[in-house]
Length: 174
Image (cartoon, rainbow, N blue to C red; front, top):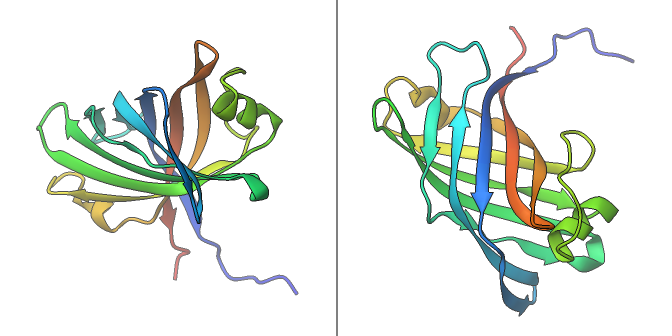
């Protein structure tokens, strides 16, 4: 029986673009094959039109500690990054965790250094995101439930970046 209760929704609140360095393999562990991928820069912006507009510059030095679960065809993500508001210089710290399903297209780009950029919705790239900021304007992000859908960006045949569309969970009306 279908429920007649109102359902929660998702609100598109941000777009993330991350530029990535080449992966550095760090070896086999009991939980899978690990590596380090440094974030060399990027942006986090609001979709148009948004007021106030989120306009952040991602600082180099953060990165992803992905783990390859080859037998399961999955790559788990563990991204840590810091961004500065380009207007106020407020600091935002983000932690993103999620998964990439290794289909033929994503495996070629991620594991073989071959392939092309993917498109939103054609592959299974998903995350949950948490934020920690002292920003008065965007303090609500500290307590928001955020999820993201991603796409992989090719550079010289290999992974050069990643983009995410970020959504805030909006509870159903009471």
